[in-house]
Amino acid sequence: EKGGYDYFMLKEIAEQPKAVSDTLLGRIDASGQLHLDEIRIPTGELREVNKIVIVACGTAYHAGMIAKYAIEHWTRIPCETELASEFRYRDPILDSRTLVVAISQSGETMDTLMALRHAREQGARVLAICNTNGSTIPRESDAVLYTHAGPEVAVASTKAFLTQLVACYLVALYLGQVRGTKWGDEIQSVIGQLARIGDDVDAVLETMEPVRELARGLADRDTVLFLGRHVGYPVALEGALKLKELAYMHAEGFAAGELKHGPIALIEDGVPVVVVVPSPRGRSVLHDKIVSNIQEVRARGALTIVIAEQGDESVVPYADHLIRVPATPTLLQPMVATVPLQVFACELATARGNEVDQPRNLAKSVTVE
Ligand code: M6R
Image (tube, rainbow, N blue to C red; front, side):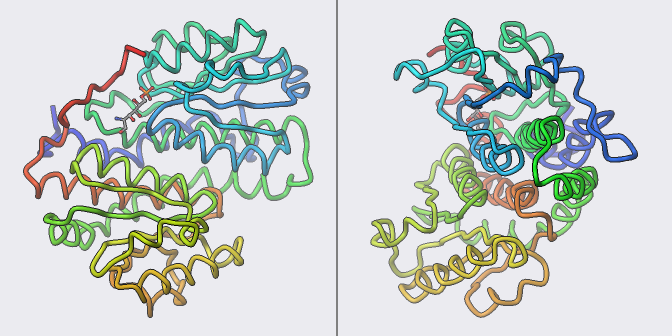
């Protein structure tokens, strides 16, 4: 049932292009219009929403962090993303014009379930983004948008994450389309690129052998650091989470702009630092700042592992290892930039002799608070 792969995780990483296409299927038509009537919240109500709050845990929370950038940019609705386990304990401000989005692969995560129950008690509408038909979280929500990743068996979430991102982009673009924003043209063009993003994920998977080799060479290290900015920041957090849970290594993700506020003190000779570089075409200011960060950590001895868009030559002089990903619109880059980090963590876990599909101390679905 592992389809010829040694681990479910490897199989699920490889299934990502299909999972992504399945999640898009029927939701974008030939003329680039989105069809999300299945969520059954009347468009009139969607136009009234004045605040969006995303709640989730772990990897799903990282998808939610990325969604915040997309939602605020394309819809201009204020959006916050919060760890489900923190949410209800701070007495959050919610009312009938708040849309709460609960993201969960399993649909059974107790922290997320308790957060959405709290939100509904306060009168908010809840939309679930979920991979498991008929599970508790969608049953208790007002609306649901299913991801179609298929069953995810490995404890470490991979294909579910990419499909959660797709669902989040669809919601953001749909809200933008329904409400009408000044980004109409950009929304149209991104929808076209989202429709083809499965091919980009496929292209990344084709080029992963050097990443595996790199991982094997780092198997005896204690620490790996990850840096990113904008949507690359949650990607850095996701890369670090994968490494913790699978390789049992100390791994931390930072917003690259925070380096000088503390974390740079951790840099010493030989520490691997993975840097997610945004496109030089989109927010080029951010791109240039992160290239400076790469130079700063390298000058202090770090081993730099750089994930950058095809054709971005500016990073070449500072990258000890360079991982190329296809050019995408800025907000979609996590779809391609996360994949090498999944492969990296999986290979490191294997090299360290760890149980890839069933890491110690972890359960696939966490049904206690
Ligand atoms: O089923 P859920 O998406 O609600 O699960 C949330 C987290 O427990 C989950 O993403 C966890 O962080 C994964 N093991 C990460 O790989």
